[in-house]
Figure 1: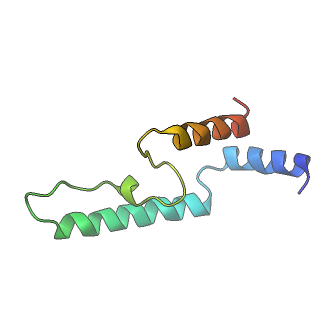
Figure 2: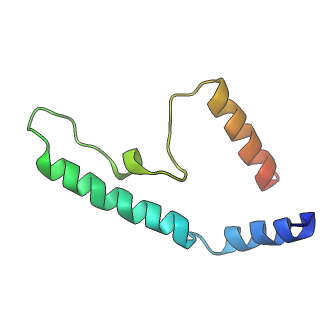
Length: 79
């Protein structure tokens, strides 16, 4: 893939949010969190849909790896 094609895919991705892969991730996260919350005990904490996200928008503990990922994402977005 050329740099130009990659740039056009980046623009397409930004204009058509969310793409099917992210949308499926959100939907499955919502379904799984509902199932887990229905079956949890009264003394356990509820889970959020973001706990089950596979692709993105997870918020792990900030460490050097996370900072590097954030830096690369910002570079990818042209920030």
